Length: 168
Image 1 (spheres, rainbow, N blue to C red):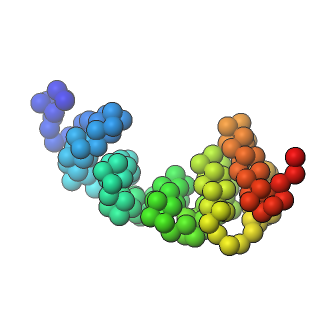
Image 2 (image 1 turned 60 degrees about the vertical axis):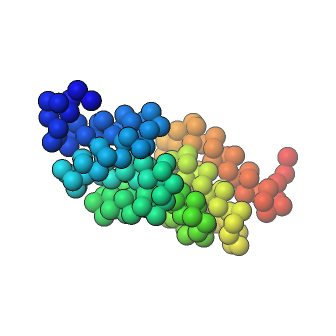
Image 3 (image 1 turned 90 degrees about the vertical axis):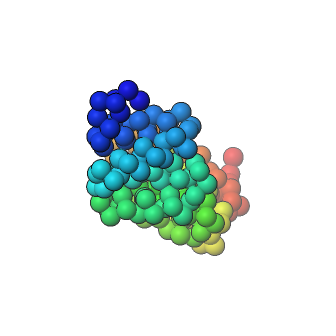
């Protein structure tokens, strides 16, 4: 907080301080710093995503989504931002839309463990069977990290189990 004494109008100082408070699970203290950082630099994807996380921690999912949507407008191909939107849709109960976003991310070649897990979880709430093309695409992805692959195999097993096709 001493950095504020030196330069209170620096967006990076505000963002850093807000991020620290967010990391310490103090979204109430993070929010004012992140809002000030956004006023100072409204094109900061990091500030927008941190504000989204802050609003979610403060039980304001609609506000959180609006910040993430603004970040997507600045960086439309960022898979992690779309993953955040899918998670928010899951939270709000729009599981069909969450499933669609997870599927799009996988088809785009996104190799993030949380996408595989979200896709598998969303299979429970949608009426369509899993697409083998999706599973084949995941398996053929270059350089899948070991943790992601482990989660994918768990997710694939979960999908098969949900469909009554699970074989031991």
